[in-house]
Image 1 (cartoon, one colour):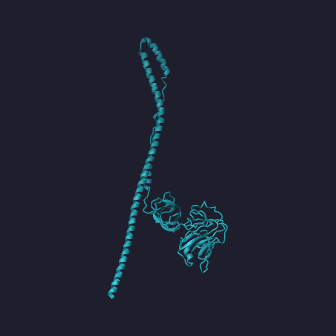
Image 2 (spheres, rainbow, N blue to C red):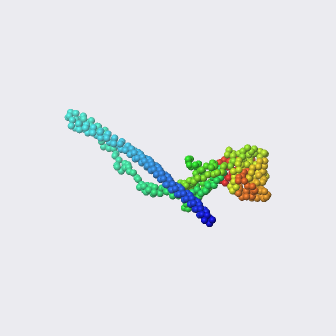
Length: 427
């Protein structure tokens, strides 16, 4: 008996050791995968950074060469213009002088012929030569400008440009091993994801943040938010689909953005909020997430399309405008859908009335009163701890009166009319 017990004990210890070794191996393999991902991130980001740097500096060299060629062409054209403008009067003076030289040559030939010609015709030739010489005005000479009076072109090139360019080029561009901001947390919202990020560089002073996302990995990133906040609810997210997010920042007084954070994947399993269609007293938006109470007298309780809300989930409601108040007007949650009621003030439900009171009516008839602020958030877990027979999901109800939808167009993007569920941006 003792031997069998000892064998069973050894077997049990062996099984436990095997299970511990298996778990230990799995943990080590998981860490190896983490190291592999880290190594890939370093190598891929280094390759991408090299490509970006080479492309940027090649573009910069091409742009600088183009600018230098354009400046050179402009200066050469200026030289041509000055040269042509300065040579033109000299050409005119040259033509005048050459004409005078030609006339003087003809006069010399005629004079020498008159002096050395026949004696019988000498007097006549001498008279003709004398008259012609007097007519030409041999004492009148054209003025030739002195060298100091004509342009002498030169190029003025400032050598300090090379120093300035050298200093600017040596300061141009940086290589960051880590971005100054990183994504911190993803929180599921109905039809959306609350994205939070934080600064990880103590020396970096952010002025604005820029959040981008894309569906899967096939599409391009698009802007979701630009501003000074460190969290944002990205809306219109398909449930059970992976989305990639990244964030960057712009330093105080700077124009350029910092490097992007490491992309991270987020998803939501919560379907977008929708109201039940077909109720006569309410008008719904195209997405059926906005409810507008009309003037119909036969108006009961409007329920959400399905019981998609869980205990512990935080719901946020926003009311834009209201009309004439009614004692039955309220908004709240319940554990089951009960048709035929015209009020939310019943068993197994909690609601907020228009006078700012929250009413909880559990079986023991205890009611809780709180004040209602313009932004009211209720934690369902605390509420349903006061109720009996709590199911895993709850319905969202609303009964709000509004006489005129005057702000529909101006709030179309974030809150077109009256009320939206917890994924409303900016709440």
